[in-house]
Length: 199
Image (cartoon, rainbow, N blue to C red; front, side, top):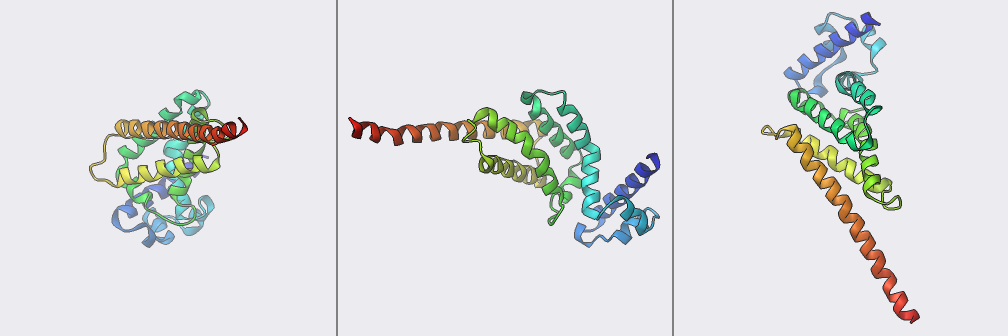
């Protein structure tokens, strides 16, 4: 197990170095292996492809800790996990700027979305009634948060993570509350003509 982690870390370090030198789509598995003096067989023993390696870097550095922490945090504390994720991105923003620009199957952006979705879903369900907090609504807010994170990190003058998360939290909670009020208001207005007609 220890040897396996040493190999994975060496491959991850090699990929990080190469991402500093060239676009991700130009990086080949052979270059990653050559950089850390390994063969392709060693790479494919541990990872499916270079996208898998990028996701492993993210998982190893943050997600495993966050998942463990989630067991001990109440649903009200889940914003803390998102804030910690953003602090991590901010501390290593050069790498994550490039990693989140990667497109295609198994990209970090898709991987991060899978992580954010259940956290946002829990909060939306707390703010909205079950019939309004449907899959579409949760997808809408999850896509918005992911897009905001990508835009935030791509800005060379990006704001501190605690300020960014505070803004995101205010927008999501305020937006969800506004949707709830509007849906309730529309429902009340729709019922009024029926009452008038019956009278």
